[in-house]
Amino acid sequence: MEKLSAGIIGCGNISSIYFENLRMFDVVEVTACADLDIERAKARAEEYHIPHAYTPEELLSDPSIDIVINLTIPAVHAEVAQKGLQAGKHVYGEKPFAVKKEDGKAILETARQKGLYVGNAPDTFLGGGLQTCRKLLDDGWIGKPVSASAFMMVPGHERWHPDPAFYYQEGGGPMFDMGPYYLTALAFLLGPVKRVTGSVNITYPERTITSQPRYGEKIKVETPTQINGVMDFCNGAVASIITSFDTWHHQLPHIEIYGTEGSIVVPDPNTFGGPVYLRRHDHSEWTEVPLSHGFTENSRGIGVAEMAHAILTGKEPQANSRLSYHVLEVMHGFLESSKKDQHIYMTSSCDQPDVLPTGISKQNFDAVMTREGGR
Image (cartoon, rainbow, N blue to C red):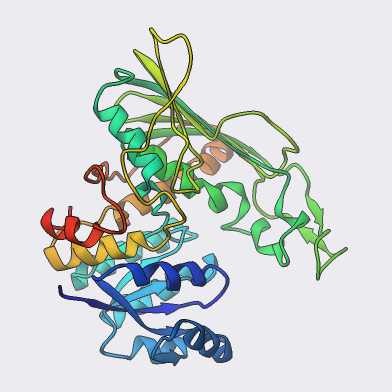
């Protein structure tokens, strides 16, 4: 099997799961890593037996690297993606796709001009939990989807995160932090969004850090921390979403899908597994549904491997740039709607990602994807 070479830029906490998981795939191999702190890159290279530890510029200039995996902070996602594309590399990035819509559009245009692939997290929808939900929908278990609800509500990250200030700056807040997981899941389950409406608020203009090592420091809040939104999907379904850093406690589900013949309880879209629950109109109680697909553990990196198969077969990857940009526009749409006091119609769209073959797992992933032609 042909193997693509990948280099990771950004050797922070999240990088470890990528280094670990990408070992399981035959189609891609991490051969280099880079960080602004070269000592951190060297430490990761030693820990995971990576041949090269570089500065970001050195990695981008290495002609042997096919894919740049962009694990930098959100504020520079777009900049690093553009540099990777300009260097002739395919790029796979962490969420969000970009902070500004203009930067996201520029990435799409550069990739188009250069004939390169861009993929983006989250890839959690490739896990067994959400894949099972999609199969239930496709098989008609709840009839035609009518509506959905999604909730991500916590009290805020200054209580536990060692450096939480960036969560309260532009490109942060609960929508840009966790919204990509929920909105990507909904796009996978229901398709693209036609129109959004939102109401947002900054509940506390200032936050006090109560975690170490910055205990007692004040944070000026510059982005909404309470976002309530409504989405009209192209397929006719209507969904509501709340993302909040202003909620102490609640008993609401992560996501539920409501159809003409029943309902589905969707698992946490920030995870890859279950549980999945189904209740049809003629059922007296909820039933837990066995998962139809593998990758139920933390499988971050599967999106990189799936994109590598797509590159080799000339297909569009599942976690692709059009999907990621559409999610970015939806997130901005909630904020724009509240500011302008009007509905916001999407200018972008995307194809609804395909469901993966039933029974796929880490043991057979490469063989199945090769047989399916990068599906």
